[in-house]
Length: 78
Image (cartoon, rainbow, N blue to C red; front, top):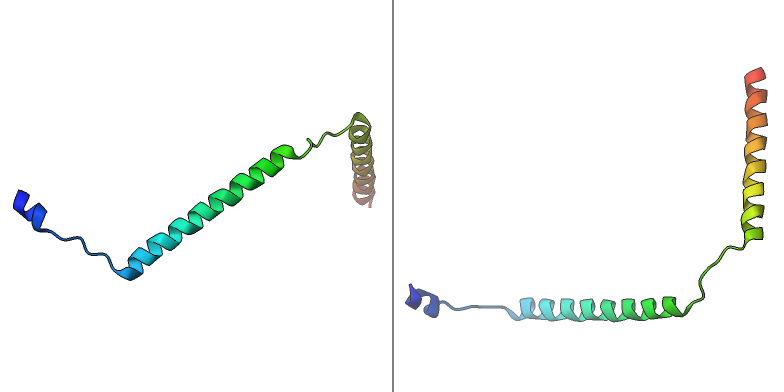
């Protein structure tokens, strides 16, 4: 059994070796780019919505809902 294991050869073609190396370079490159983007995102200011912006957005949405309700009532009446 030991002789069989020792006598086996492991063959790898140049094409396979090139593919493995290329994949490794691509994976490492993507990792580096991702790390840079993470660091850049950490430096950006946090996006905070002010109370006024929130109230305005809430008002605008409520107005749109009211308009849709009126349109729905008009459609039901017809």
